[in-house]
Image 1 (spheres, rainbow, N blue to C red):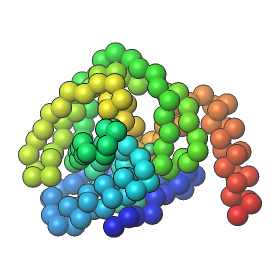
Image 2: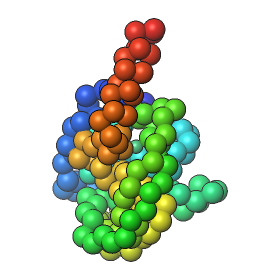
Image 3: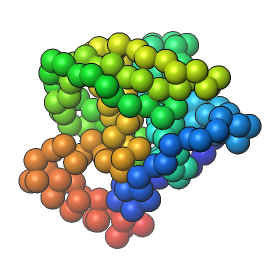
Length: 165
Ligand code: NI
């Protein structure tokens, strides 16, 4: 099922998600819906926060053919190194793209859908995407990493847009 995606400046995007305690049918259905929603958008990553479920779950797929799905439950970055700057966008901040600096290599510890602990080392675009999605779980948007001036401009633009509706 495709879920509605919250859009900036919706305050619910600022909610801090809670860890998943038990991977049950509800959680598995949410994960399936998150993949459906991400692929439909289309996007390369989605955090539960963006579909108004405030549990620490992210899904990503940075492949060209949408055939490398990754689901991370209760993800935690336990190591990071290097720096990479790349242009980011977000399904919750439509039609807005800016460069953001992040760690180039990260080690992430999380649970898979079977509840097993998995540790992955990733770099480049996948590392950027996972950091962006984990930020969402803490109520953080990629625009929070931009200069105050850029944030101010975006805010103005968004306010104008909502007045027109
Ligand atoms: Ni995003």
